[in-house]
Length: 326
Image (cartoon, rainbow, N blue to C red; front, side, top):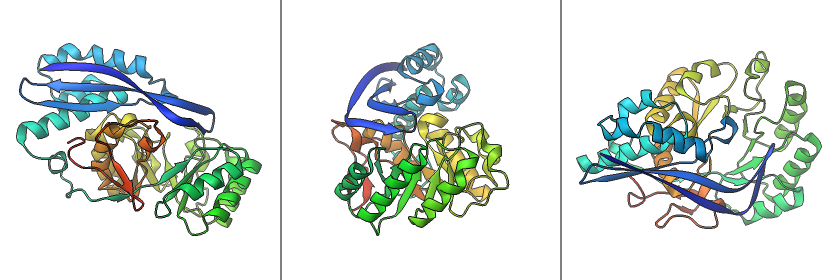
């Protein structure tokens, strides 16, 4: 077995702002596994708020090179590396390699139904209200809308009012990206309900989950930064209604599938998201998305260029064929 690692950078069409951060590009780690006859590929974009940047991902992947080239498999990988972008890239490469070795698609190996096009949110980065409203009008009118908030209640209210006025019939979810605290939630929730928002993602900071105890949830709360791995899933019950699975957070499709199935057992809804990345990042998440209630796989729409071939967005859906991955 030969492991090849490459670093690639994808610039954004324009700066992308969320609570506490502005992004201009995404650097990804691409892993290729070659058994001499077949090659499998995977991509990791890392987890910015956990310090999982490109240097960290590359160092982690190099650390296990010898073990992988000596014969460690996908199951062993789960113990060789912690969750994060490096494990995601290599895990997904193992999935595609096995699919090519066995001449069956990844979705079949994963035990999911044949992939269908999935409704996917399109995201509005935080900006001035009038800018976000104008951007909302340019989105595919059939697509659900995801809105990034920043924790500034007056500005967030103006943003939501403007977006809802521009898109009165759209499904809208918001992502606070840890921008609020318990004291500010009452005002936030009142504003979201007034604007017909269907989902609130990660309102409080990671580590402040206990602040949600006893809080009524008049609309579904989704856990993102709070829910990194399978080990985090059970503790979501009673505080959240939805778990947002991202393969870069949990370390690959192997654990992503395990989280989705455990969440179902616990009565939680399941969402699949992304840490940006190209279509090579979206494709394994598209397989997982077949098990999900909410799909947020719009990362390539922010890029100045994507891979060719790449995923397609039309009629409010993401489509991902086997020629891309898997």
